[in-house]
Image (tube, rainbow, N blue to C red):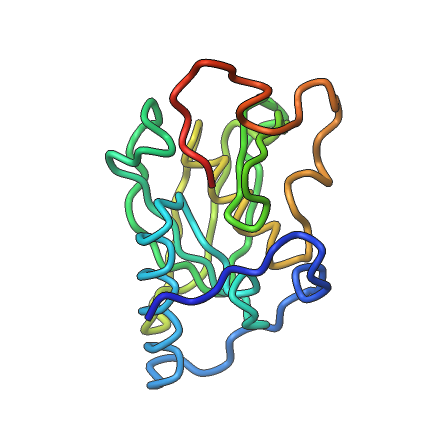
Length: 176
């Protein structure tokens, strides 16, 4: 089922989400199906449970031929529960970000270039991966939602934050 995505300004987006305690439940399966459907319907690169009003440490992400990110490398579809992120170097990279909870806007955000992420899949089986580039950016962006952080809170230079049509006039960039 496609769920409504909360928008910036909704106080539920600023809460720290609770860890998932039970795996393999019908409720968790239904949540993951709804998150997948909602993300796909909106051409998102990822979605965190708090974005649909569910206060749990659950994210889904994946990119393949996405019209919102036409030049991004593929990111494997992943269900990541109770994630932990560990930077693998101090190297940071700037990149444009958008968010389904912040529609119509883009901004430059500094993120770790390489990282390791761990957590569990839908069944509770461990996930342990390394990521870099856009993949690492997506993981960091989605996991920020679990701690009540929206990407505009990380924008340092507000001359590189604004509405898509103002930042990229005469370019075909899909809205969030």
